[in-house]
Image: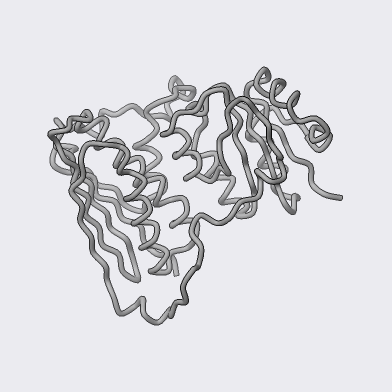
Length: 268
């Protein structure tokens, strides 16, 4: 028997409105009331598929998607939301979501829940090349978040070429780069067009190192809010630094908080 498509009703009203648009497709749905319940389904499902219904896509925690992908590399999760900003869409897709759909909903669920890999193996490789090389790059960027996706692409592609596992080049590294570079532009430089962000990186057969520096006033890492504080568990912001530190092997702040150095080691 085929697995059902689980509908996770984080916002019952959105879930009800979405189901009403599905017609006969609703017969394949099984309802869940929390993201944690989906983990239990992953243990026995062959092709786990889920839809998360939420009011605002920004309210979803990317760490949950990362955990889904860690437990099942074939799980497909689609988000349906009334509202979704470009930055929230990018963050959730990088974390492992198939996509985010807003009204009006007119979806073929089966088609939406099966997608092509983010990075395809278009050219032949020779694995023996990797141990003999190192690649370095440097960019000086305007204080504009539109440049984030380009740097994410470069870092992910370099990690792929140097043999990092797919969990790293498709999710961990993109999430960390997206968060760190967005922080530099938005919170560091305050989007000031007269300020720049420096991005330096190097990657070899053993590790990837990335350094991002802004021209802002800086900050003290130890004074940043802890998202694991019981009083902040439902807060919609402040999770970026924790996210970076959870997916990278080493994170260091220098220059009074204006520079972040991140290291990801390649697992052999």
